[in-house]
Every structure is written in structure tokens, then in C-alpha cells.
Length: 352
Image 1 (cartoon, one colour):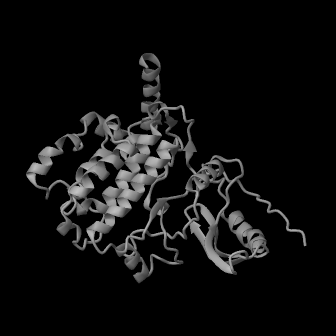
Image 2: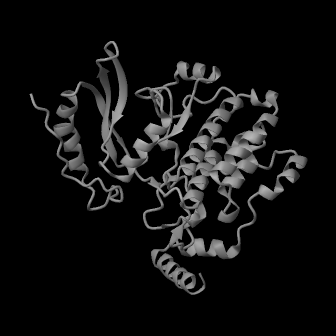
Image 3: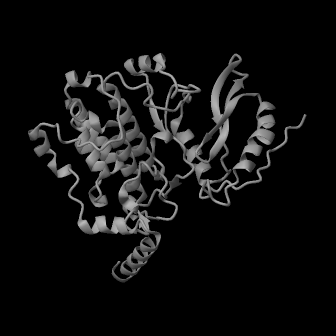
């Protein structure tokens, strides 16, 4: 029997967000149930359940691999437009990987870590991933905990404590990666990071994780620096309270999230900084069982030795100018934001 192609009757434009008139959730749900379900079953997939991550819907499935002794491989199925930027980047990354892929699951901090030392692997892995992307001219634009994976597949890793994950961490077998490139862009190899700028419209994706780069009426921004700021904000939320046991986290995070974009680490600089100084950490402190993070404000420098603070004072986030704070307050209101953007365009046009 001839296998038919799938027809999609809704837009795959990722700028169309949930809650807008253009976003038809019902159409998407019908597609996955009435069209995609039989199409996938016809191709040897066993379907577990729907998933819905923000605006992305799909199936959690298991694909029978007939040429591997009837083994099966769990996966998630989502739509990617052929010849799109996402498709181009995914094919580039698959070629660059050049090895058999692992089975990936979400909730990289579940269950919580058994020692501070285990968090080093997470930080190093994600810094390495971002440095590789940026070195290849790729900006992610949506770095957040929801877009990270760990090489242990589970249907509900958030709901239970998986003993296998704890054992894998202890043995050093856990890997952590960035994923979800539906908003990513790939710049030409000849372009310098400083020369790459994008319009603010459509740039504010990692809402809980974003630095304040786009909050003062800016009309464009540096996407590579923005990526670094987003990853730094993620480290800040999850790991900054571990600074008393791993003091190098304080200057690392400050160097990644500083409001002064010109002084911010690049991804490669952040990775090199971490690799150079992580070996100097106290092994006794690294074996401390860390408490889980919370979202309260925390001064990551407050409990560090004075000598250490003096050594790295040049990386501490400087006081934010009052004019910047006033602009950020004003630009909470749409009309003020538009006026400030207009003024910035005129000034940029006149003075460069």
C-alpha cells in the first residue's frame, strides 16, 4: 500500500505565538490526532502519549529498528519545515556529531545532585555546547532550562526520583546538551560576532532567563552576547547559591550576566575561564551535598573569603547607572518603549 504524505493546514511560523489570533491550537491538535497518528503508526512507531511544550505539540514514541535485532529506540516527533533555518542547523549538527546519538530526556536537575562536584559537569557541558554553537556561527536565542537535555530517557523524569540518574552522575556517565533550534540562526562564517545584530522584535524569547539587554528601549541587540547572558542567568537561578562551595561560580556568573554587554564574556571566554579555575576548587567542599535551589535573590559574593573577592573584583557586575534603571522602568509601557526606540534610531543614524 502506498504511504501518503502528510498535509499541514496551519502555519509553522514560530513568530506566531499562543494566545494570538493566528495561533490555532485546535487545528494543531486535530493534525496530531487525525493525521499524524495513523501516519506514524503506518511507519512502525509505537505511540505513548501527546506532549505539548509551549507552542510545540507532538508525540512521544518508540520506533522499531528492524536492522538492529528488533531493538526499539524512544524518541519525540515534532514538525520541522524542510529547507528552514532550523532544518539547516539540525543537519549541520548531525554531521558534526559524527557518532551514534544517545537517548535524551528532560529535567536535567532531577533528581537533585548528590554533590557540588556533580554540578561541574552540567556547567562545563553547557558552556562547551554554547562555545561550539557560537564557534560555528549559530545563535540559539532561547536558552532556558526547558531547552536542555540529559542522556537518560524517561517519560516523566520530573515526577519521580530516578536512582539510575544518580548512579550515572556518580560514575561520570551523564551528559548535558542544549536542544530545540526552532528559533536559532546561523550566520556566515566570515561574520564577526560583534558585527551581528538582530532586531529586538521577535528577540525576547527566553523570558524567565533573559538578561536585561532588551529592556531599555533597544531596537536591536547582539545575539551572541544575549545567548551568553541567557545561559548565565540560568546558572544564576540554579547554581549561584553553591558559590560558598565553588567560589569561582561568582565571577563566572557575573562575567556572563553583566549589564555591560561590551564587558561580558564570550562563550569561549566563559568556557576557558571555567576550565582554568575549576581544578583549583577545594575537593572537600566539592563533596558537600548541595541544597536545592530556590528563586530568591541571593548575594553570591557575600560568603566568599575577602582575599578571593579582591582577586576577582574586576569581574563583579558594576553598579547600574540610574539612567539605565529609569529607562527600563519607562519602557515597561509600550508607548515609552516605542518612543525610546525611535530616538535611538535617530541617534544611531546621525552619529553611528
